[in-house]
Image (cartoon, rainbow, N blue to C red; front, side):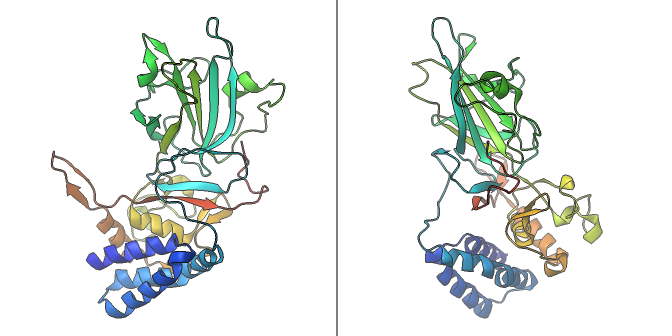
Length: 339
């Protein structure tokens, strides 16, 4: 088990290596291969690393002047000049602002409402309108009243910003499966004289947060700053594929059968075989056949990664909970249009 854990960590760091770390990690894997009495699963991970990770290392070595971001992304990015990115596992991000505007009156206050349109991922998580696991606003974890949608489509009220039965903040989530422009954004900004929200601004495949606030100088010192953790992406789990010896309806060729997962071995398996949006390759391995990744070994690795540890106050939590946000440079012609 300890060798499996070591190999998972080495492979994970290798897949995310930058120029400063790639060389030492290559050497480290070589040392591990020679010195550790690893079994079949360990050899499997080394084989994947040597055959698939090599191309990723070469790309990392070519990016000598680009620092690798570390940890949760706390500050929002703005503009369209950014690589597309997606979250794998459980991870929070401030996202990328795609549009912002004011509208409406509140009593004698003109332009009392501010709507912020934020992309939090460039792949769909297919989790529906309640597809956010956690939300933080201005450093405070908040609760969303998912059973109280606003009738005009602006989203759901945030509990901590309800004062004397009056709401001052709403949140709406688009899970990436949308095929038409958001009706609320079209209603509020479709006729904007300078920056209209156009019918082509759909955000196909993109996870979008629409954050709308009502002016209140006591509650907000500026534009509300959010941090959003969407539900994990659906991933292929070889253990749930009865066609390869598992038990269930998962099929690699049919992503509609996949389920959300934050299991480290399942995450690595999907990255190794490649992440796709429809027929388009996005990240990871390319043209990697299932025979290169023996199902029995990956099932054993995934089961080991499902281990949990007891908590002092009772209950348990997962022993392994990795996550990352991967950035991928894509041309404008790819099917990930900007909002």
